[in-house]
Length: 269
Image 1 (cartoon, rainbow, N blue to C red):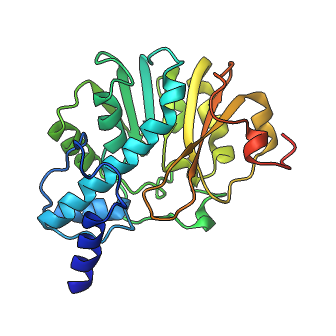
Image 2 (cartoon, rainbow, N blue to C red):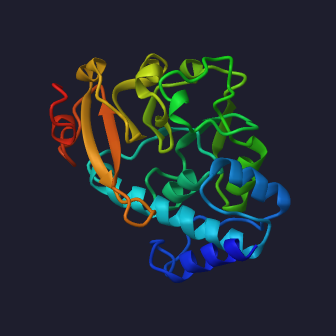
């Protein structure tokens, strides 16, 4: 208990979490034991318990990460038409969809689809990256759909639709979508190359896919079929290297960030 208090208070008092002095856009509901356990399955590096300190730590951390993602993508969003159909893959407890909705990345009337499933364990290790389970095996998901709904309702987000991955493969979602994204799912915990065939039918000519890249990511040949850009996003962890966000489209992308070749010199792409 003392260790937890020290970690939490140090993080709250330090400047390691961006946005802690600002407004919190994503609001975390009271941390019951059930909520704490479900969130801990998704946010594995936070030392969470069923108390107010954990709720506040979670709220600060999630707002900080969402703020940094939004800042990193602002140049791209500023040159895109507002998406009317949006898909998030692996939304967890909904921090990104809440943050982006309230920031006006898409209009209130947009169709927002969320793809996730209930899970009982976390498979974040690199061994699952290249060969994640294939549908109908959804054991790579660690979400809780009831938790997701409760967080979205708590933040007054309406008009969304949740698709349970246990009932529908990714490629069968009712695309196409203007914006598809997943910050810590495809591209980070699961290989983008592995899922590209499932994503392709969900994308029209001007659709944009955004994902966070794993530090072990290596460009692969099929990326030549798409327009790509890399944008850098500051991590919430102290002294951590910036995260790389990949934007991918079948059409032309705005010249924001840097090229894939610049981000990965020597990749021959």
